[in-house]
Image (cartoon, rainbow, N blue to C red; front, side, top):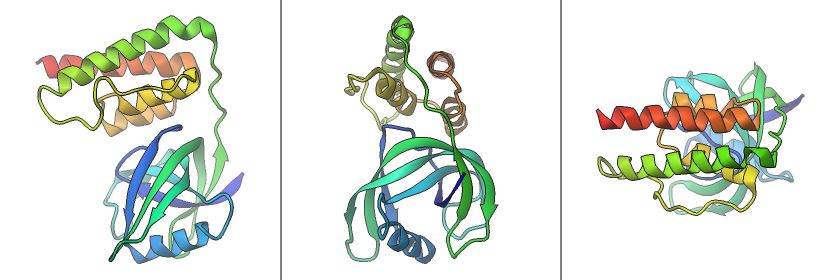
Length: 200
């Protein structure tokens, strides 16, 4: 168990994935000043279940990801940063805000890769790329159907989870996967369901 400063967001951060943030709220500027004072510069990211990013009082999901600060800039009026998703965490208790959210968390086990899963990973990649291509006919997508994936199979599986064109609740299901096989199965099932809804 460890205590981490927390940043509830309207989006899910996955391991091995970057995320750009613009920080202007006073409580999170204070949090980042503290985070950047320590090494490594890390905080937890969880998805907001109900409420808004600004102002506090939101309800949050308990599963999230540790974010490590990799880039920082300070244009006028806000702080811009890029973070990298690291380890998955589960919140065991929310602490009193100080003045930003704080939580006691435990790390979730890393998912173990086995080469027997390679056909399933290839199937997941085909489904995700096909659905991204289909979705791009209806609206601009954050990720291109031909986006490059890592050569590391564990990183590539998490990247597929992140770029799959599914909603935040489905992304939480993916993040909660307790084995690599379950993660790949969930990517395939949820992305196929998203493709079916697009087809209608």
